[in-house]
Length: 284
Ligand code: ADP
Ligand code: MG
Image 1 (cartoon, rainbow, N blue to C red):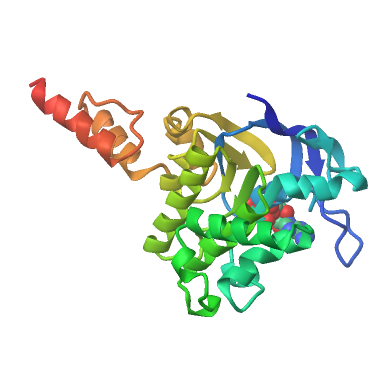
Image 2: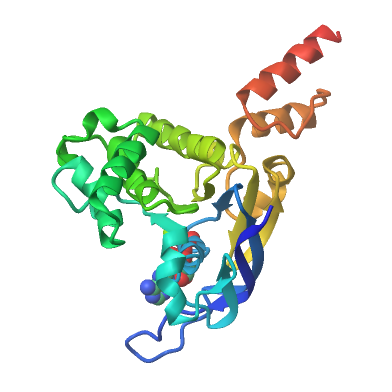
C-alpha cells in the first residue's frame, strides 16, 4: 500500500498576534504517514494541535518547517493546491457552516460543479454520494430541516461527490446527539471498508477512536502515542497524563485487575470485556 499523506518534520506556527508577538509553534516536528485505504483516528485534548494538523493535510495550513506531501505533491507549491484538494477533502465540526445550498442534492452537486464536471456525470455522482451516506431519500429536502447527523452525512456526501481518495474529518460528531454520532461513524466506516477511502478522523471520543486501524495521540503539538487502538489504549497512565480518557471498558478491566482479578487489561470495548469476564467465570 502506498502512502497518501506524508508529514516530514513538520512544524507550524500561526501568524503573530495583534501585539506582534511571535506565537509559539502549534505543531512541532511532526513526522508521520497515512497509508492509502487506512482509517486513522487523531486524539488529543483541546488545544493540542489536532485542527492545525488536519488543515495541514490539504494545504489550508502550510508548514513553517518541513513538508507535507499528498500523493507526492508538496503542499507548499501553489500549483499543486487544486490537485491536493481533489485528493483530500475536509469535513468540519459544524454542519451548518458547510452546507451552502437550500436543497440537499444541490449542496452535494456544489463541489463537482466547481471542479467543472459534466452535468450528466454530476447527476450520477450526486445520486451515488447520497446513497453512500444513506441520504438519497432526502435528496429534495431542505437541509435546515435535517438533524445534525443527517446534515453531517450530507456534508460527507459533498466530499464523496468530488471523488476524493481521502476524507479528513475534524471532530465531525462533536455537535451531534448519540444517534447522530452513530450514524456518522458508521457512514465513515462503511466508506473506508467498502470504497477504500482513506479516513483521518479527529475526535475526542474514545469509543470512536477504538474503531480505527490506528490511533495517533497529539499532545502539546507533538506526536505523543501512535499505534493500534489496543497498543494506545493499554497505556492508560500515559493517556491520562495527556488529559485524555480511557475507554470505559478498558478502565473497568484495569480496575478489576488492580484489585486482584486475573483479567486482561488490553480490553477495548464492552464486547471484549463481557467475553473476558465470561471466560474468567468459566475457568473457575
Ligand atoms: P485542537 O484542534 O487540538 O483543539 P488547535 O489545532 O485548534 O487544537 O490549536 C493548537 C494551538 O494553536 C492552540 O494553542 C491554539 O490556541 C492555537 N491556535 C489555533 N488556531 C489559531 C489561530 N487561528 N491563531 C492563533 N493561534 C491559534
Ligand atoms: Mg480542533
